[in-house]
Image (cartoon, rainbow, N blue to C red; front, side, top):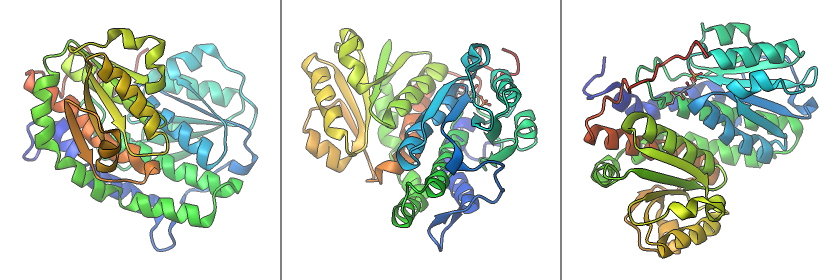
Length: 365
Ligand code: F6R
């Protein structure tokens, strides 16, 4: 049931404040300002020397964001790869180490094969899954459910923001266990996290502006997405979302990589979508935006008012997001990224819920 939405994808984008709130209610003790993991974990974060993450597609990008969180908040080195590579690369994995798999469906063939490989190496396995009865959930030593509810649209939206929410809670729990995160810092991040559903609802109100912008993006043959830090995997996710439902060629890059190749593509025909909350490395991204502008590139800035003022650049459009704590920015910025892809594809008359060549659950490799 799509409710009063035209597509499941639209319904699922709009549901995010609610389902992220539901996920938070499970993982956060709001009164104490602390994360609570209700399931006892069969391993100790404090004893890990490394965390291996594996997943496919959008779930992989959630894992890439989580790498930044685990490394900064818990000082835990993270190795991450797409599951189709992990399974055949057969990386050396320490006995009693931890492999984290992320999957909406819990049935993705490559992710399942990587999970089985990790188990065979004597690793503990932890699954972040949306379908609690799935094969991956059954075969993992511990399960952290996302509470997104059934996701029908082929392009993953609400499962992604719920994955991010669970992963940030896990990183906070790891930070506490490893003594790298003070109680004050944990409380500050939890306080920010609690505001995420409200901020996502605010982001949804930019829909009319995004619809207007979509008409411009629809004319492009290629689109570049740029970001730094956790906004880099968000750039990758933005590009994936756009290409899979609009069939416009899109690439995500780390903003600092621009001058190492992709800058050759920049001209007035290539919109450059810059994902840049006003965080500690914002100024570095501004210098990349200047490089784009100097070559006639048309910038679409997804940022906040402070950042837009500090950048002082002429853009094709600026999507002014609410100000957010940079730690939780990926969760909130998922919304405009998804809406850009959705409205571009709808304007182009594409079947956004059933894009060509794609299946919701990839149970064969
Ligand atoms: C993209 C998308 C896919 C899935 C990928 C993994 O919008 O939906 O990239 O994220 O196929 O699927 P799960 O999470 O079910 O393992």
